[in-house]
Structure formats: structure tokens, C-alpha cells
Length: 113
Image 1 (cartoon, rainbow, N blue to C red):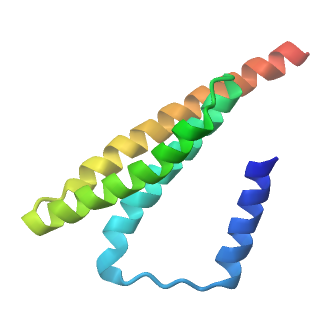
Image 2 (cartoon, helix red, strand yellow):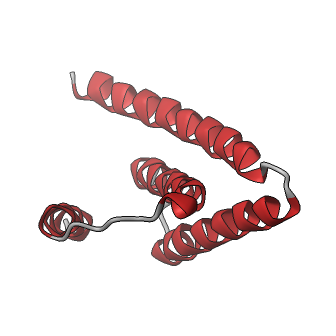
């Protein structure tokens, strides 16, 4: 329930406050957002499988975002598009987590019938 309330508050804040991110920061923000989405899908998967731990989620959410953005920045300074590797890794993990979530939800729906 707390997560749902946080989601609603986040949506309202996002609608009310118009945040403009400069174009030069967009690769870093996109990788950071993917890292956060990976953590959110991992938390949903953990919750459905009864293995969710809030401290692991919080540390992963912020840690992954900072690490991903930092690596993208470092790669940019070195002239190597490291952010592409992060996009591939986080994208793959998001799809894996989504597949597991889907499977768990289907199993729960079958058990209720």
C-alpha cells in the first residue's frame, strides 16, 4: 500500500512540476532510469515470490542508478559509449524480471481457480 501511495505521489509531482533535463545529460538520465526500473521490477518479483527486502531494494535502487550514470559519464569522458552496455544489461534484466512476474501472476491466477 505504501508503494502505491508513493507511486501516486510521484505521478502527481511529475505532472505538476515540469522538470527539463539538459540534452547533454540525457544519456546519463536514461541509463539511471533504466537502472531504477530494473530495481522496481526486481522488487515486484521479490514481493510476488515472498523474498522482498526493503533495504536491498532501496540500496539497489539508488546504488544502481548512481553507478550506471557514473559509468555512462566515465565512458563519455573516455570516448567509449559504455551507456549502451548498461542499456543492454538493464534492458535484459527488466525483460527477465517481467517474464518471472508474468509467470508468478499466471500461477497465482491458476491456483485461485
